[in-house]
Image (tube, rainbow, N blue to C red; front, top):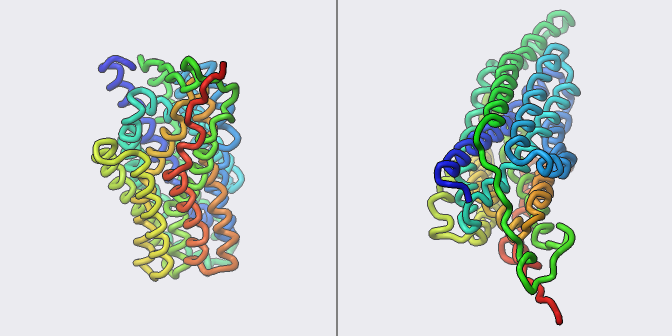
Length: 425
């Protein structure tokens, strides 16, 4: 374990990185309605490709990220991840100038590629830098940084790019002159240039700072299999609790993205205007911050990680059901409150899933980060289901099974296969 001075430095740097994760990730909730308007997309399903392009990058890049980290170490890997994210942000400039939805999606994919590397480094780093029993508490602190940024970013971006959104929508409906229409759309699209140029610059500079910092490397803890009398495992796939944890992360992130990024589309389906729905993502993130504060205060002093996960899953089922049986702003309120249920899930699932992996910690972390692809898949499933069922029914169908599986993982799944196997004579 690092010295107290290096420990504080590590916590500070990783906290800033989690702030960056949150700020960049939760911009998607604003980009969905913005790009639907600026790029003249025909359906919500097209607009939800924003979440698909972003989160699917984790599926393809997480395992390569573990190999990169094995060569570069944690610190340099973090810097490289920041520089890749900066490149994705800078790509928004030509995307805005050409109003190319495909180029916007490419920029989002590149940003998420950098984040896959960062998350593959940061999550195990914060988990094993101290005692595993308090890992959930440390991740909850990181979660406060992450979700506070996430609550702030949609408000900031929507104030810039969605200012007067209803007025613009109205003008586009009545403007038939092609030149005038293109000028209006070009002005709207150009609103993202300054925010994303500034973001790219900050990401690049912080990557330099991390590269030059004295951030210490860490050693992964020994696994149960490194102990005498225990058969050594040869593959990361011999840890069943990890594989169950990957699926748990997949479903959790899918449910989290539904509550955070899809909430605006859900509100519009209930008849609310874009000016009303543009900050709904922030409401979900604010409830997540409250949940993380509760986690820091209670885990592990009053609640064990698995108990916190059980309670969170039960609350998720309850609030999803209440969103289904209520209407209007009351339904929106319960979706926003899902942030409270989701807040303690990642801090609990991740350390429970990587416990005892030893030398397989980096590749195990990469597999868990791959699970973030759930944020790409579940909104697409919702987009298909909502064509058949009303939005409230579709939301219920897509989220409740996720929380039921998370409850299983909390009760039993996280312990499957953890018992050491004694050597036979």
